[in-house]
Structures are given as C-alpha cells and as structure tokens.
Length: 293
Ligand code: CAA
Image (cartoon, rainbow, N blue to C red; front, side):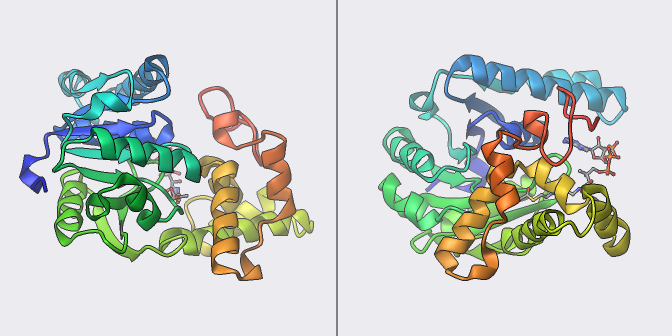
C-alpha cells in the first residue's frame, strides 16, 4: 500500500461542491489533482468554480496571484474514471446515491494502481459495502469532509470492517497535509457528525412544518440562542435538502428507530426540486452565485 509521503497525485471523482472543495484544498497543499465527472465539460466547469474561489482569496489578500496560478496549474481534468490509474490516492465525492457510489467503487477497483487508497466522502453510505464492491476492501476508507471544505477544519475518517491500519494512517496523514483535524468514526450510519447534525436539521423542518415559527425565527433562535454559526434551515440549504433527506432516510431505515423519520416538509421540498442553495431555492431563495436573496 502507498505510504503517506508517496502520495503526490489525488484523483477526485465528482466536481460538485464537495469535490471542488477537496480538489481546491489538495491543490493548495501542493498535490497534483485530477478531477473527473460524468463528462469533461462538467469537470471543466468545476475547475472554473475553483478558479473563482481562489480569485476571491486573492481579492481578500489571503493568497497571492502567484499562489493562485500555481494552484490552478496543479489541477487537471480527464475524461473519466479509467483515467485515474496513475493516482496514489482517489477520493469519490459523487452525489449521495448508493448504487452510483457502488458502481464507482467497482470501477475504481479495476482501474486504480494496486497500492492506491480508495476513499469516499460519503456522509452516510456504508464504507464496508463500498469496499466489498471494489474487490480490495482493505484499501477502502471514508474521508468525510465538511461543507464548505476550504473553511471547515474537520475530516471524519471512517474505517470499514476490513480497512487496514495502513490505509487509516495514510488517510489521517493526508488530511493533516490539508491542514485539517481528524476524528475516527465507526462505520455505522451517519458516523459521528451526521448522527448529531441530521436529527437537528430534521427537527428544524418539523418545527417549521408544525408552525412553531417562521424559518427566520427558527434559524435566529438557534443562531443567537445556541450560538451556532448558522441556523439549521439555512445549513440544510447549504448541505442540500436532497442530501439531508437521503441521510435521514438511511438513519431511519438502518437504525430502525422512528425518532429519525424524515419530516414530510423535507420530502416535499425535495419533490419540488427546492434542493437548497445549489438549486436557487430551498427554505430560502438564492441568486446564481449562491447568495441569499
Ligand atoms: N467556500 C469557501 N470559503 C467560504 C465559503 C465557501 N462556501 N463560505 C464562507 N467562506 C469563508 C469566507 O470567505 C470567510 O473567509 P475569510 O474569513 O478569509 O474572509 C469565512 O469563510 C467566513 O465567512 P463569512 O464571514 O462570509 O461568514 P461566516 O462568518 O458566517 O462563516 C461559514 C460562514 C464558515 C459557512 C459559517 O457560517 C459556518 O461555519 N457555518 C456552519 C457550517 C457547517 O456546519 N458545516 C458543516 C455542514 S455538515 C457537513 O458538511 C457534513 C455532511 O455530511 C452533511
């Protein structure tokens, strides 16, 4: 298995908000990044969004133009999964759909170098299951970043039942190279962070559904009453309501406790396509740059 200091190039599967964030922090920490998505056009659009994020850091004097350019030079786009064979470390950040992730891990198991580590940014799907499908379960691990990736300090590292100690250590070291703090979590639905977060977000949906207050009242209550940086409904919009519903459903089905039942209002928002910030509408409305209207 590859050693921590041998990891030079990171393959990122998925150019959505999490994949872009991971690609950005990896490139900023000096790694070469290969980004793939359903098509090279989607991946290229993701790279443009990374350029814009770096541009904002230049505007705020957080990084120099030279660092921006050097970071961008480290990020490349390829056609698809078959082009990730040279990367020492691969991380999947595709939408939270089990069958899609299983297919990706099956393919990664076929194309990745023998000594590569295959990580998933999944927030709820079993790492053990993904590992089994890959055919090399000892090399498969959860590397769960928080949104927005460049700002949030934590990475939750999840070991599947057969994940090796070496894969765990290399993943911890890589997260540290990105400037992150890690926690270890068992491969039980929701891991640690979402076991805490999703019931809070779901309960906020119930509070709105039952008319306890307006969305603003609920968010202000939690922000100022509990000192959270964001209210639960605006945070649900940031995470994506489809993702929140998916994780709530996994908790409900796999832990079998009705306390996790997803709120009907959350289901309705997802059915309406009001998926949160990325869709321009969730509990709040947003412009095409994701700013609250
Ligand atoms: N990408 C990059 N940087 C961002 C950003 C983004 N999307 N959003 C904000 N930032 C940066 C800002 O540029 C700013 O940087 P500087 O200090 O260098 O200027 C900094 O973050 C603070 O931003 P703001 O002043 O605009 O606003 P803020 O102080 O309210 O912070 C926030 C914004 C960091 C998002 C903060 O509100 C926060 O921490 N919210 C909670 C986020 C959270 O809980 N995330 C976890 C979600 S759960 C998850 O991801 C797991 C899962 O599986 C569902």
